[in-house]
Image 1 (cartoon, helix red, strand yellow):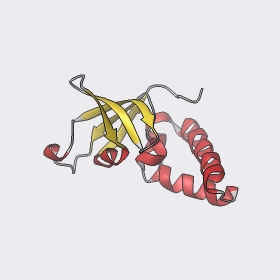
Image 2: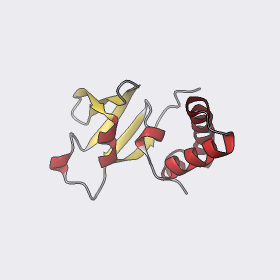
Image 3: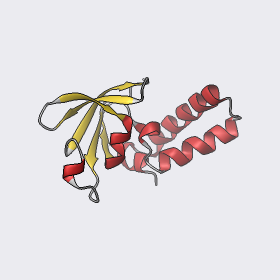
Amino acid sequence: MSPLAKVVGPERAAAHTRRLARRIALADGLPPVAAERLARERVEAGDPYALAAPGQIWVLREDTDEDDAPAYALGILARLTEPPAVLAEDEHGTVDTLPLTVLDLFHLDSWTEDPWT
């Protein structure tokens, strides 16, 4: 089971993966089968580029030193595209714009809303 399916359930994870595949196919001009495979691989790997969205809580990975991360937990308020970033609030209420790569230090812990519905 993918990290996303563990958080939101298999049906919602599959719907997110299908939407991601359609976006990849359109953006990169890939055939649908290739886009679906790529989307599935990225979701199963827990890739922030494939997962990060408003309404999510990301928690520091156990193997990450707290001194290397901006916070223990981040709530995603908005996803920004150029450059890829998130507007995030930490557990102390501090809001900051962070590069999307920062989420590599975290794992998706919860997702309380679906921005596509």
